[in-house]
Image (cartoon, rainbow, N blue to C red):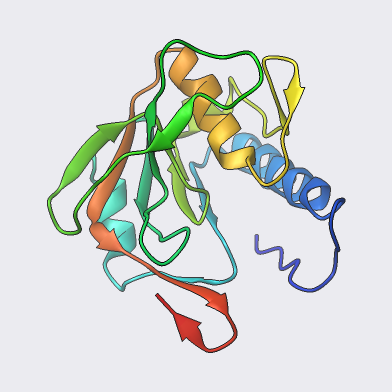
Length: 168
């Protein structure tokens, strides 16, 4: 199922339909016994993304997607946890170095195994706090807290459009 929400919703409410659509896709995946691919509409996957990610050991696997011009959406766990912030900061990774275990990957290219979907819904809330534009990190934080293995597959380098016609 593909849900394209580009240019439909404006801040601050635009994340709610994304979370709702991801939970709808989660529901369909659970009903049919499928794993779930989450790919943002402004992300281009390399041709071999599916085979590389699905063959990677882990419970949640992400490809490399730049969140800005320099950082990939791969995160490490910050300890100790603070009650008012998400528990992640950028983890420096290099493309084409194989799988890297981490605490979170970005939702621009995220593969979630069915048994993880059974345990966790998409949400904008973590530890009682609401966050905007962080449902992917929240999902991973909850999975990490439950002991699931999260992996960035650095051999899958995606293109991300940060503005029309500019791909990084």
